[in-house]
Image (cartoon, rainbow, N blue to C red):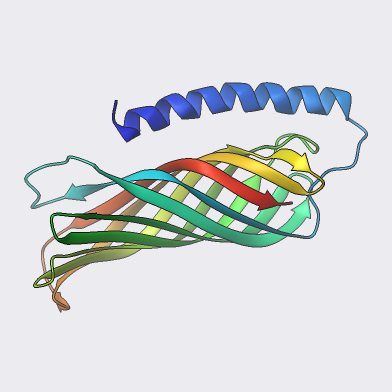
Length: 200
């Protein structure tokens, strides 16, 4: 099973489990204090895949690799957080290095004021680079991110956060050895799944 299919299965399982957990926490702690306050930081690692919407590509096969993210922001209310997030992906195979980096401004919504389940969305930019030592091909453009996760507290304000994130781009600029290629549309997209350590 490819990583894209595994991510879909994980999204469904995480959504069901986390929604039930959030509802249970809301029922038990309806009048309780939210664990979310002030600044937050979250760092995660896992697996991911990069694919392309491409006008000249011969294949739409996705490529798996290692992925992770770092997020930092502040709490507006028990239901809302705003921040910035850097998502990275990389793979080296057959002398070819590939990497993708996305920087997003992110808003996260928690349906429950005390539960940990959240949905997040973001806007920013994503760049993808492929380099074999002789030729470097890059594509960069504006991006949109959508993801889900669940903060599972383990001690005080510290939580483990399973997450799934998808980032898509549009109107990407393509360059070969730093020379812009007109008339070519290559829009990379990144999906990744993993576990994060979060300070709420």
